[in-house]
Length: 94
Length: 104
Image 1 (cartoon, rainbow over the protein chains, first blue to last red):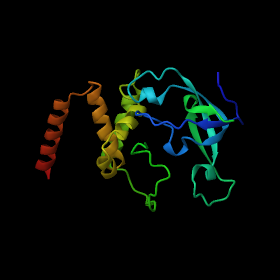
Image 2 (cartoon, rainbow over the protein chains, first blue to last red; image 1 turned 45 degrees about the vertical axis):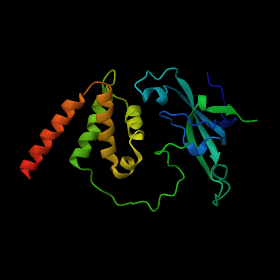
Image 3 (spheres, rainbow over the protein chains, first blue to last red; image 1 turned 180 degrees about the vertical axis):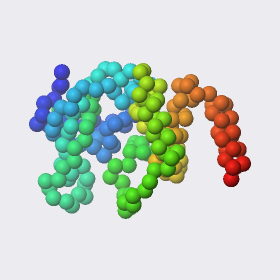
Image 4 (cartoon, one colour; image 1 turned 120 degrees about the vertical axis):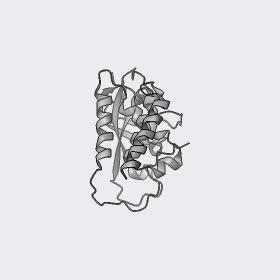
């Protein structure tokens, strides 16, 4: 059961543990909006070390405004970037 | 904080857009991973390939080509998992190297 719905604002957790992480550093701590729920998948953080990937978790495609990602972004304000992020990296954004 | 390989957004210079053919050994490395990952259960997953590449020391990460990173990771992961024996692998590499030098 997915915790977030399309259109919902989320905040990417700003943490930097060791390990095999698929959440790029440049989006951590940033605010985005759920664009879609991609499904439920095993964890690369576990698979990367020979684990079984459990627990499976919802994966979201999150849309960010480029200007929120890059402090000096000088492209159009409508530019976005979408990143696929697992649920345990996301918090609700108020 | 940022892991070395996690380079999104860093200055990277111009992109080399030249097309190039893959060498035979590069195709073999690709095929090797497909065979390892396609086993049920897999002998090695693509996630492990990536993790092994991420664990390369920064100087090796920068110096190695795309498929050199792959084969470095595949070798390390298979030794780690006990599929290959380090001494056996080194002996085989020495044997192939000697044969190549003999042929050259």
